[in-house]
Length: 243
Image 1: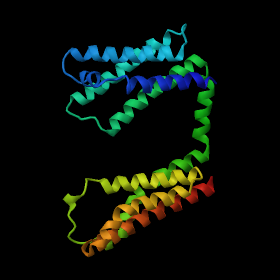
Image 2 (image 1 turned 90 degrees about the vertical axis):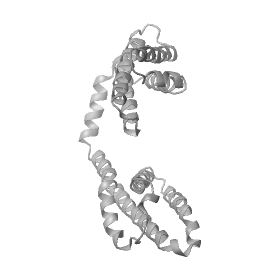
Image 3 (image 1 turned 180 degrees about the vertical axis):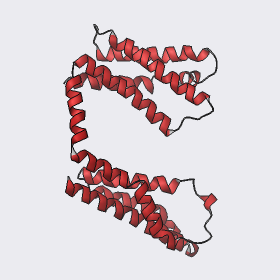
Image 4 (image 1 turned 180 degrees about the horizontal axis):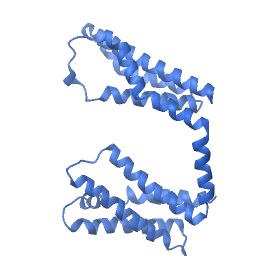
């Protein structure tokens, strides 16, 4: 399989979508009226030319044509979404990038003539029990683990804590990220990363031990942290044994 072409297409996408996209183009695509179409065309043209030059497939005019048309369409949908009063968030950014990368992969498969092997690979992943073990492990350390941990540490929750002093759902997402990282460390064989993660998180709470009034809150956070690490570690090592 011609992975060289795929890597060049991915590199061209990130180059054109970030360093080569100026703030003026980015804001121009979001403006109301017909003016935004000019910026959409310019941005899509930059993508098409960049991909054509970097891949150096001079006889493959399908590369700039596909890149230009699909990028214009995807970015148009994205601007229509933000036009309705919805600000761009992490989910919108991820969906946008995944859509562009799917186009890149599809274009690569068409040019390489590897549609059948790719389909066979997807079938293998879908029917492979190892895939479902890994997916189940990651899924279980998110919401299910959060519910379990919150029930476990509820009895130690300090009274009189000010909810307005914390960021909305920050603790929830910190737990999600740390457990996902722990699973990744275990699956990739870098268990030492768990120790660095625990040390890094503990440092942020160490200063509060000097204040007697904050000791209960600090202990509560440490219990939650250790519970989170324990759940993720148990799930990770159990899944690794099954693998």
